[in-house]
Structure formats: structure tokens, C-alpha cells
Length: 142
Image 1: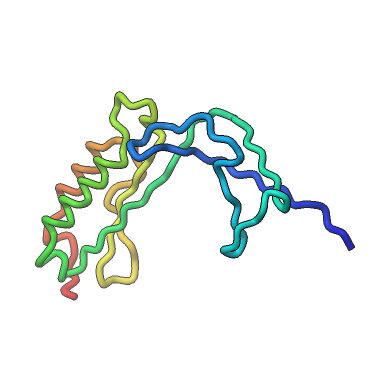
Image 2: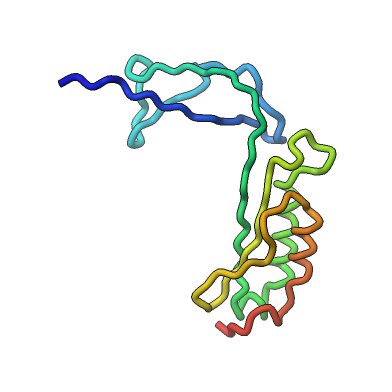
């Protein structure tokens, strides 16, 4: 029995190291792998169809706020979190402003994950929520 070929459609965006779009990519710029093995161009035809559109990304920053972190590394965690937010969230003047939403949640020794701030595109809301974290946020002492 011969099966019809499977078609896979993927929407993607390619940026360089400083987050600028890479235009003009063609099929030969890409390789397709299946189960870790390169699929030849004869087995899997490639076709790139340019369909410019805005991409939306949702990111989740999950923080460990267990007792050991709160007691010894809270300032480092806060600085690293703010640095991460500033590096991935676009500025208001950026062409991709409002394309990335981020939520911040945290865990400690309890069963559930806790919300710190819901999804937003505002850097100021995210960094403010991080700055407000103190040793009293959790009663976990692990």
C-alpha cells in the first residue's frame, strides 16, 4: 500500500544574534531531520512561502523562591530576572513591541506554582513585580 506524502507546515521567524530579521533565506538554508537523522532533499521537498505577519510569543519566567534561595541568593535572582526581562522584552519604540508577552510565576516547597504577574508586554510591570519580592513572600524553609 502506498501512502500519500505528508505535508508539514511550519510558521517561523529567523533573527540574527542582535535580533534583526534575516530576509532572503531560501530552501537550501535549511535542513530537515527526522529522529536525529538528516533527511535528503529528495525525500523531503522544501518550499518556503513568504507570508509576512506579526509573531506573538508568550514567555513564562519561573522563579525558585524556596527558603534556601530567599536566604542566600534573592538579590542575585532578582538581578538575573530583571536582566533577562530587559534582554528579551522589546522596548516601546521597537517594531516588535507588544509581540512578546511574559508572565512571572514562582515555586517553593508547596504543591502549587504561584502567580507573581500575569502575561503582559510591559517591562515596567514585570520588573516592578520582581523588585517587590522579599523574604516574606514564602514561608518555605527548605
